[in-house]
Image 1 (spheres, one colour):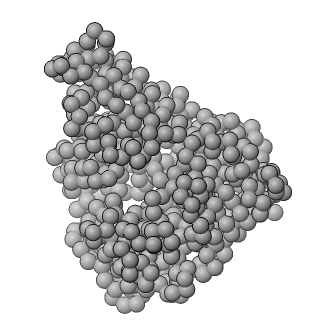
Image 2 (tube, rainbow, N blue to C red):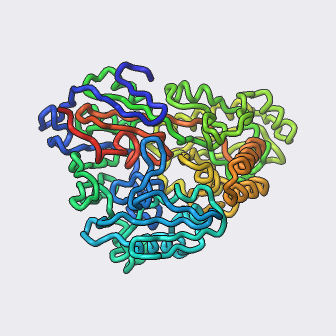
Length: 530
């Protein structure tokens, strides 16, 4: 997508935007969808299950309601947030000491203290708390308040990525401490230190954020940020075109329809977000390593990028993009239908009368689910099924809600989306380690490769960069030989936004985007155009 009003962003860059504005029903052309210059309405395809960091919300930073000890800037470098500086790290790499900023208060007016930090981390580490990301803090042995403004983490082993995990949002003990973290009202009525407060949340419809009058930084010019929950891509595009939305997350082919719109700009951000087909190891067909290897060879990634993503992405050969410094060179796989067929032949999968292969009376057939309304996943699933059919594997594509899909993830294939920025540990461990098999969305196919487990553990327990690189190379090479997923594409995230604001920036993004990612990740810094 290369139209003259498209901003393609390989990394983080400041964006100057044209001076025209979108008109909206019932409002002046300068006021946008909600009829007020200080208000922005964004259409996103999903909403969180909870607004509590204790259950995983905002774990990678960029929450508008909360702050972490640290945060990521536009270049994904760590910088202080609630801490006054980066941590002091002990010589053995096992102690991290943070000093809190003076004068920070929660949105209810109560002061932030070290005890709030201790409460947050200890609650997440408590196995009774239903946080799906607890394993990311597995290195933590203890966390204690050394003073009202000082927190000390002691690790079980040196963990090179630990500082980046302290972008985790901090919650107030005086509010959340008296509640069950799994069911308490804090999950829907959060209190934080961020630039906005949650003013209204109507599940399935919208979440309304208002500027926090007690925020430690400058007062945001955008006083109201409404995230409209519109799961269907086509409906989101229609509402944006009608002026009901100021901006939206869109698939590339729908974003292209706004390319000549003089009132809106299209942004394209690079990401670690990828789509992959999860192949359950317990299934009688996808559990056969030969089938998984054959599918890996049969899939035409380049055509998917070209046709489904409209060029807004790259082929995916594993969880890490091929331009990432941790990517294992040589693990790229060519599209090779003939080789895929030979793999199946050698494994005893023979073509039946209808062209579908059979082994020991079992047809090479399985169901592939994708979430309804997601056009990219739908089109990728159909393309995958078409590629599979060429080698005699029959894939039935079905769309459903996540409520329907989740109970079936252990036995049926799913067109899944993952991807984490920062350290490779963040994206690989939860995806592949056998100890997390079937733990929510972690290790969906129940993948179990002892060599991968050992390499993931080794990489977690050393600060030596060369040793970590060797371990992650092992992970990626094992995954190429013994795939638990068919990795398809890495995506560029595409957004369309009305031209009413300046000082927008973007980041290289993780899978999670829309609510806090995109050009509005720094919405608190936006200024209206003169």
